Length: 402
Ligand code: ADP
Image 1: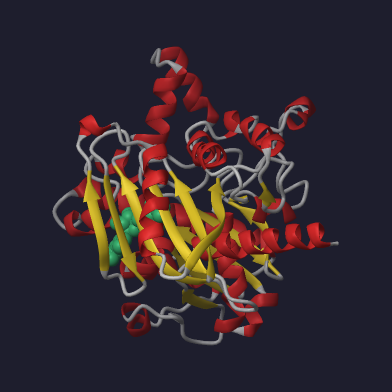
Image 2: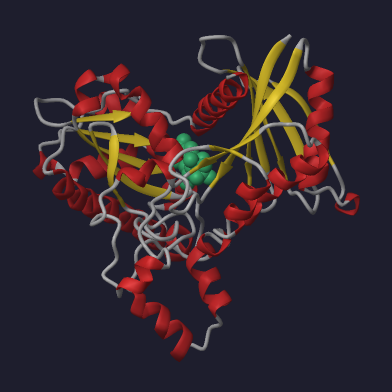
C-alpha cells in the first residue's frame, strides 16, 4: 500500500487538488492533479496525470446542486476507483491567513478551526472558502488528519518595523499590521534557489510572483525581510483584477463622495481594478499582449503593471541594501517574455542586463554580465503544502509514539 496525501486549494466556486505519493525519505511525488470549477452552478471536473494527459472528466448541470461538499465526496470516490494500491493518509489545505498565531503549518482540530474562523475578517474573500473543505472533511471523514498551510507564515521572519503601519498603537494591538501573502510560493522558491545558484541562498534576492495575484518578496539568507502585500492581498502591485497599493484617501472618497457601500467599494478594488480595470478589456496578460498594438488601454495596463513592479523592486533593493538576484515566477513571471524584458530594462541602474536569447527560451538564467543575476523559476505551491503536511503528520505521529 502506498500512502498518499491529498492537497486542496479551495476558492469560491473551485476546488483544485493534487495527489502525492509518500515514500520514506523521498520528496512527495505528484501522481494526479485536477480541479472542480463552476461549483454551485454548472460544475466541471477534470483530472490529469503528471504528463498532463487527461484521465477523466465530468460535467454536472446547474440543477444538480453540486457544491464543495459534493466535489469532495466525488473526489474520494474517484480516488477509490483509481487508487491502485494507494490510501489517502492526510489532507493538506491551502489557507490564506494564519494571522499572528500561526507561523508554521498546523494539524487541524476543532480548537484550531475556531481560531482560523476568527481570522475571516482579515481575509473575508478567501478565508471562508479555504475553511469550508476543512469542515466538510471533519464531518464526512472524521478520522482523516488535516493540516492547514498558510500563505502568511513565510513572512513571519520580517522585523517589527517592516510589518508596522504608522497607525495608533491600539491598531497594531488589534492585529492591523502587514502580514504578506504568496508565502507557499516563496517557500518553494527559497527551497530551490541553491539548485540554481548556491550564492543566491545566502544573498539578497527579490522574487516576483506575477500571477493573477501578484507580489514581490525580498529574501535575505533565504528568508522574507519585506514584501509588497500587506494587511490584505489587495496591497502592493496592480494585479489581474485588484488595484494594488492606493492612497487610503481614495477609499474615503468612494464611500463619502461617490456614496458606494463598503461592499461595492471592496468589490471594485478586488474584482474590477488592476489590469482589467485599466484596460477595460481583460485581466489576462495574454489577451492584453495580443491587443496592445491596437488598443491603447491594453498597452497602458501593461505599462502600469511593469512600472509598478520596477518601482517596487527599487524599494525592496533599498530594504535589502543591494541586489544579488531577481527571480520571476507564476503565470506571467514564468511565461511572459516581454514583461520580464521590460522589468529588467527598467533595472539597468541596479546592474541587471538581459540575456534576450535566454529570456526568449524561458531561462532559467536570463541575465548576462557580472551584476545581479535574473532567473525564471517555476513555482510549486502544492508541493510545499505536501511537504508541510508530511512534516506535521510525522511530528504528530512521533508525539503519539513517544
Ligand atoms: P493564479 O494567481 O490564478 O494562480 P497564474 O499564476 O496561473 O494565476 O497566472 C495567471 C496569469 O498568467 C494570467 O494573467 C495569464 O495571462 C498569465 N499567463 C499564463 N500563460 C501565459 C503566457 N504564455 N504568456 C503570457 N502570460 C501568461
